[in-house]
Amino acid sequence: MLTERTKIAVLVSGGGTNLQALIDANIQAGEIVLVVSSQAGAYALERAKNAGIASCAVERKAYPSQEAFEAALIATLEEKGIELIILAGYLTILSADFTAKYPNRILNIHPSLIPSFCGKGYYGLRVHEEALRRGVKLTGATVHFVNEIPDGGEILLQKAVAVEPDDTPKTLQRRVMEQAEWKLLPQAAELVSERIRREKNERV
Ligand code: GRF
Image 1: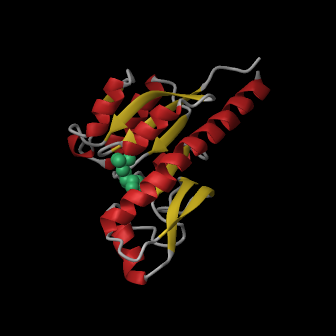
Image 2: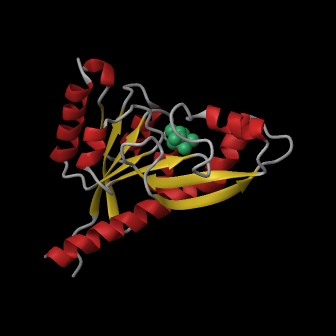
């Protein structure tokens, strides 16, 4: 018999459409038991509430140091027994100490085909502005494990999306979300949840 489902926390900062895709996908091997926002007013928190998922805000500005902030975040995660952390539009920087604590246990979605348009400073619309400026014909999204290098961890899944001649950063962002991000993130969550569950099962 398989052990219980992998306990997932989704970390968010904004609208939470990727969180919504994860909720709607009804992952089999994992269960979203916690949503943590870096902003108290994020709409993603409403989405969590509507889905009956425990949620809270842990804001960097509420703490005197990065260490104190991360200690509070870790305590929140540990209280729920979190085994997999998914960064879904999460904009607060996490230190190497934090990422080292969860090797192969943190996933991030990035709205480009890494290694293009990624790393420090590449977030939100900026990624799509640069893709259009460079004139690429294909862009997409990447789900990768998170380590101490921004967008530098092992790539798990990628999906390409065509750039259209009349695209603006906004239309491109929307297409990348619809065609890639909202599909890829639930797939990755299922894959890694299953992996973690199997590992636990082997230990039992
Ligand atoms: C997405 O484009 C994601 O790839 C990026 O931030 C955006 C988050 O959107 N990292 P949402 O909050 O999931 O709607």
